[in-house]
Length: 355
Ligand code: NAI
Image (cartoon, rainbow, N blue to C red; front, side, top):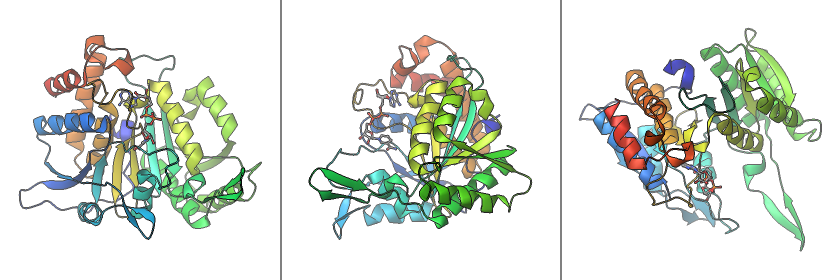
């Protein structure tokens, strides 16, 4: 069941070894806002489930190196050593001049593919039934390259950078991933009708990469059409792995979260060749931070993707089952984003009981 639900990191390799205590060390970036509360929930549940993991806290408070936002060296060293990290949300100040820490992390570790599954949660019905989508977002370039400047006052330019190299990597990953979860098709989502060069390169690269995978078919769809069709009938996308440039993936993955009940539920994995960082899709939710209201499910399910990546499938299965059972057990055990009345700590206690 877990394999079908969350298998995310099946095509990346984890070569970590146990530490002197017989456990795996994992870097933990707790994050801002609700990050503190949901990280605490994860730690409590992991302790109760006896997961053979020791957390290494990572401070990613940014520093400036050559006038550029950078991750402090001890955090880089920790993640490079442990090869895997779990990350709470990091707030990005709007228009304050320095680059988003999330982008910096993705760039620093070349986390080129962002895998985002969205699957209906049993016991929490939404207007959509049996949603089972997987979306892979290019994670390092596109509109998120951070190349912006003022041409003259009142006129600004923001560059969408697409390279063949990054496109090839994420598209190849999408094919490998589709094979690993037995999905017969990769769907390339784009807007090459308008962005003929940039999205055009993405599409052409996909056609080339597809030749390496004769047993997986390929199809193409324009992003606006995909948006319409996904919200009309998401089941049409159950048999495909979608892959798309950065901005489209960002938007479409929030849309997919909406189909299954909201941002509090959707996990993700940022995959690189060497290092992988798992994180909830949502942000730091400043509107509810510090109020014991946050839903830790997305971070918990992200951590289950991580466990699976590390080959700790049985623990992933155990935790995921307990989380889903808790959500299905009624309004009093669900957090406010799922129209429930539970606090973060009550939800956490219930998950522990259901382990
Ligand atoms: P957000 O995802 O933080 O919040 C959007 C809405 O969803 C809010 O009403 C919030 O209360 C709710 N929500 C989100 N996660 C929830 C959870 N686990 N439980 C219950 N309710 C939840 O998006 P917003 O407000 O646009 O961004 C806030 C900050 O987070 C910004 O600084 C943004 O840059 C940052 N951010 C960070 C991300 C990351 O670290 N990967 C991703 C998205 C945003």
